[in-house]
Length: 142
Image 1 (cartoon, one colour):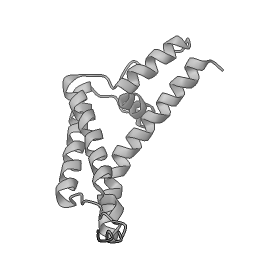
Image 2: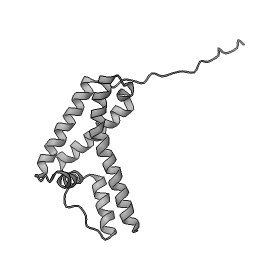
Image 3: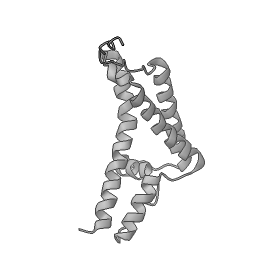
C-alpha cells in the first residue's frame, strides 16, 4: 500500500474523531448532566470541546479550509489519488446525505452549532476537578 495513501487515511481518521468529539461531546455534556456524570464537566474536557468548535466556526467565517482537510488532500495527491473538491464536512455530508449547499450554509450551521455549545456551557458550566492532596506528615520539630 502507498505510504501517502495510508497517511491520508490516518488524517481522515483523526478528522472523523475530531468531528465525533465536537458533535458527540455536546450530546455527552447534556446527557451527562442529566444523568449526574461529573466527568462531563471537567474543565479540560469542556475547554477542549469549546475550543474545537470555536476553531471550526472561525475557519468557516474566514473561508479557511481546515488544516486536516488540506493535509489529507496533499497526501492523497502525493499518493496519486483525487483530492476533495469541497471541505471535509461538505464532502461527507454530500456522501452521507446527498446534501449540496453553498459554503455559507455550512458556515451558518457551524455557527449555530457553536452557539449551541456556548448555550450548553452556560447551562452546564464546567467545574474544577477536586484536587486530592496526599496527607503529609507534619515536619518533625527542629
